Length: 315
Image 1 (cartoon, rainbow, N blue to C red):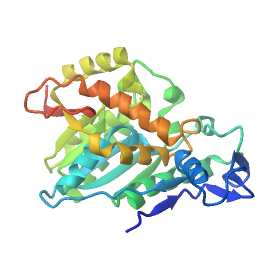
Image 2 (tube, rainbow, N blue to C red):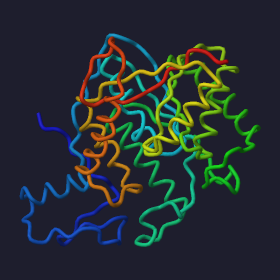
Image 3 (spheres, rainbow, N blue to C red):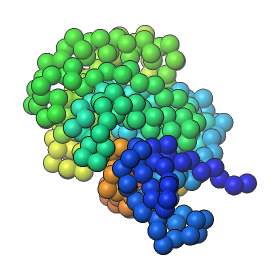
């Protein structure tokens, strides 16, 4: 049985050239015959075509997982290893995006393509629908909030911020979502480097524990690429440990690397200068470094792992 090929709708191929969002000439295919192996390899490496890998979903457990992402693509970048491991055991995944509206200044292609901020938002949401619903076959939703409501410091790393009302409102809404969907496990960003949108998502999730009448397990994931900064990572870890008791664990990702690279590269609106093979090399390097930190005899050592933390109790 042939594996399905997903063609990203943001690209079109015409006259031996690939165009992005209609008018930007992104890639030339001259010198390769249609259907030839070199031509196809280029299209797959550039993430224009995605060869959907088979994902085996188990039946052992019936865990319902809610993955919270501050911005579109955070799940694919930072928490997909946990999700794929859980899917293999029979869990179901729902990805909840909080902030989908952002400044056009953050669009890497803005100098090549002239689009509005509304079109930019729709583009990013479409990428998430392709990655999570079409590729993984799981559920995606966005609350559609604008990062601009976070204030003037939304693009910096403030040492402190006051978003009490927003956090309170998000926490109540999140607690309602968790109860309604009977969620067993919530994945939440650590907010490494203090990006205000990630900090708000973290604080609202922690506060939802107080409002929720439905008990759930809370797991923290390392925000990538920010967690590569080890000084920032350990500073944030120290802050979290002052708030709550946590325990770290590792998820083996060896068999999921190809799928994870696919999921990330679908977000071409964010990764304009990294092709699929380069992305695969990047995540291998990240996970190999994480695997080297494993310290527990009860965890099977693998070459590639992703690092997570489970919250045991609040202090």
